Image (cartoon, rainbow, N blue to C red; front, side, top):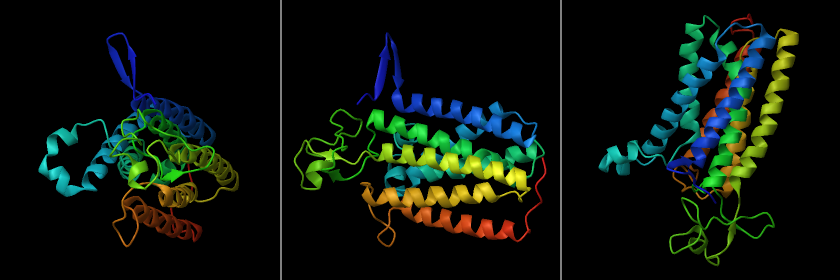
Length: 269
């Protein structure tokens, strides 16, 4: 694993590098989505502001998952480059998009629909950063042929504190490379959302359909991958991410039912 890339005196974190690449890809997707919808808005500014808001929300959400540890020594943790949570990014990005929709005089659900495929793709690419850096987003030990070991990761699988010994496996065991799973699923979700958006445009479907699908699909995907992740269980046997996934799925179903009844604002560019 390569948590950092050293170029002379310059040190680049591989996770941050992949997040930046993910945001660039998300920009091109959002710009293309705006173009096919006939929307005039600054995709570059939207991605930049939403990306920063998502990172801030992701970091804050992660810290508040263990509030006792955070408030015991808040400042070093607040400015650390380690520890981010997906649903914090969703919340932070969601709030930013609502504000930006008002700024660009767009219906909020239209903005969320257009941003959903971009968000899915950007997230998947960012997960490759988790894999390269070995930041602990891997799964439980496995004997499957594609299992991987992270001896030199930011959070190594080996050693006395490694996940292998904790689960009673040999110290050099392999674990589920869950970032790869999430990347592949994110690509599929991106494709589904993009095609769903295309169909919604052609059929003049109400705004909110694509975003509702995003909430459901990403919620299901994250819930399932958490089954083999090493995150602790805290809420009725669920991880914090699984509990948030349930909320995401329910919210998506409610939104879908709401817009299908025609209660949402009719689609307009």
